[in-house]
Length: 95
Image (tube, rainbow, N blue to C red; front, side, top):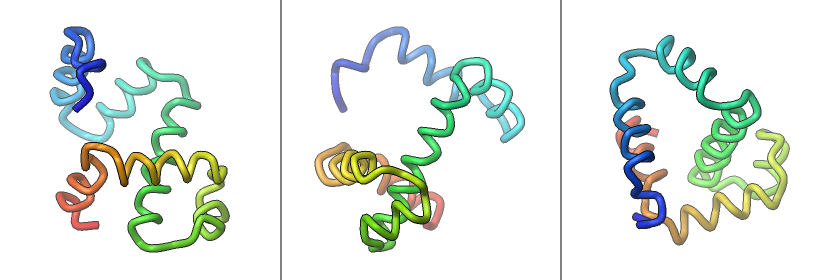
């Protein structure tokens, strides 16, 4: 994990997220903390990652998700060179 984000403020934020108990609380919290576009961008990146794991082409992913090929490439780089976060959560969720 990148030491750049391991700050006290980020740790507090993650503790707050882990304290959320259900989907409604997630909506309430994230709508206050993030802009609508930020939330939609997170969701889009997650969908792109799922589609990459399913083996779809960039063109198919762009059509299904509305993501640009630049966004798809960034997510692919995160999958290839990141910390394994996408894979970890997909396994937990059975995806």
